Amino acid sequence: MPAIYLTEEDVRDLIDMETSIEVVEEAFRQLAAGNAKNVPRSRAAAKGILLHTMSASAEYLGMIGWKAYTTTRGGARFHVAVYDIASGEMHALIEANYLGQLRTGAASGVATRYMAREDSKTVGVFGAGLQARTQLKAVCCVRSIERAEVYCRDEDRRESFAAEMCDMCQTDVVSVADPNAVAVGKDIIITASTSKTPVFDGSGLAKGTHLNVIGSNFLAKSEIDVETIRRADIIVCDSIEQGRLEAGDFVAAMDEGILHWDQIGELAAVAAASKSGRENEEQITLFKSVGMGIEDVAMAARILESAREAGRGVPLPF
Image (cartoon, rainbow, N blue to C red):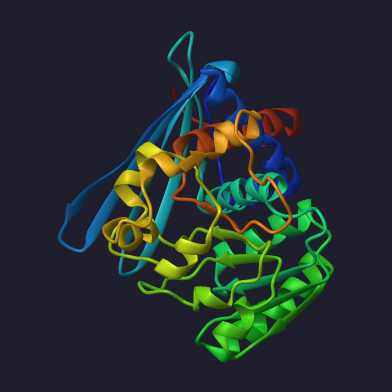
């Protein structure tokens, strides 16, 4: 069977957030069981451009693959490829901008399912970009959210975000001009900004809050302050190996001796029920995501399955 090429439009038509959460949760369970392996991201630089690559094997799916993307001043371009483990033949090459937004949101959806209080109803969102959209959508898929407040520095962007997400999530989403007000008293907080420095004061967090911290995957960037780390009772990341290379949100707290890697769990262990994501209603819990290749490969496998069933995709000459 020839490999196929799938576009952004194909991806949008072939998978939704609910399915993405299911796919990513299973990928983490299989990672915990040893039936999948993840290789951390690496970066190659030239003047004006970065090439980012990450890969993973998913024996439980019979596939192995990679994600590669470039970032320049003009934007980013993403692709994922998956291959048959038995034959080594390529199955698909997929445009992966929206795929990446979905899988990152889905990982936070999994974390929220296991770490947020079941009665969570309010969300504070920092950032009004594409990643913030799928983050809020994922949280609304696993909890009955009644109100979300969003902050970013651009008033027009946050107003547009609020209007769009009211419809997408079928809940009340409002624009708020004070970042600390967005953090205070919320059941769940999402940070999906481009900020290099903390976006709110952690001293205002309510007991029982869950945080999904996803905006930074560089050691020089942090969306949360040391007080947030100090107050967090349970901290989980998607990958400790990759987090050591990219989790800038932990750096200041580790430099001050407040946090150590042996205090941090992995989402795979939580999804596999070998580690608790929450032990009581008053704990503050935190999920730090940097993104993993196994998420991309698992998503690509499900998209490929749906594409074959629907007769979608352009055949490639190999």
